[in-house]
Length: 265
Image (cartoon, rainbow, N blue to C red; front, side, top):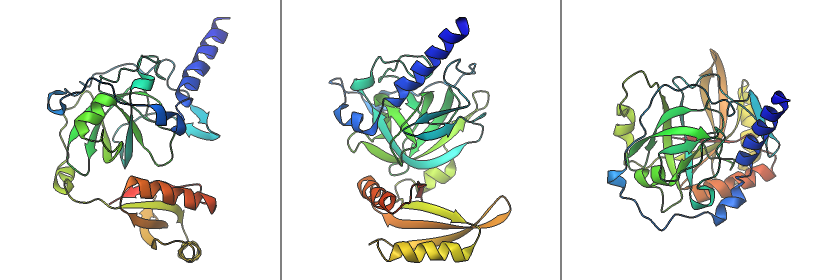
C-alpha cells in the first residue's frame, strides 16, 4: 500500500511539472514587486541528497521521453533561457519544494535534482548561480526556465528569453565565471538550429540541398568529431533573435525536422 501511495505521488509531481505547457505561459507574468538586480544574492551551493521524487530514470511529456542524467558533473550547455513567475508561485515543483519566484531557482529537463548551475547571459555577461529543483521548460528550443529573481539578475525579464550558457557547480569546489564567457560577453552571439548529424558527408549534403531549396536562411554542413569519429552537422542560420528561431523551428518541423536543437556561437 505504501508503494502505491509513493507511486501516485511521483506521478502527480511529474504531472504537475508537465502541465507547464508553452501555451500556459502566455498568461504568466511578473509580480508587482520589482527587484534590484544588483542586490539579488546567488544561491549558495551545498551538498544535498538527490530528490526522492524528482529523479525517475525517465519520464514522458507531450509524447517525448526525457532521461534524467545520473550525474550533472562538468555539464556545460548553451541555448535559450526562459523564466516563469506569478502563475506558478507557490506550486509544487518536481522535487517537492514549492516554487518561489523570489528565490534563485530554475527548472531543467534532465539534470539530476537538485543541482546547482552557473547561468551566464551571453549578451551582457551577467552571471547567476541557481538551484535546479524543477523540471522543464517543455517549450522547444529552451534549455532552462529561470525564476523571476534569477531572470531579473541576468537581465532577461524584459525580452522574456535570453541566450545563456549553463555550467554545473560542484558544491565541494570553488567556482568562478569562466574566462571564455567573460571574453565573448557583449559580443553578438549567433543562433543556428541544428537539424541533423551524419557520419556520411553525402547524407549531410543531401539534407542541406533539400532544405536550402525551401528556406530563406542559409543551410550549412559543419564537420566535427564525436566519439572519435567524423560527424557532419546540418545547421540552419544564423538567425538574429529568439522569435526568428521559434518561427524557423516551426517551419522546419513542418518539413519533418523534429530532432532540433539550438547552437550558439
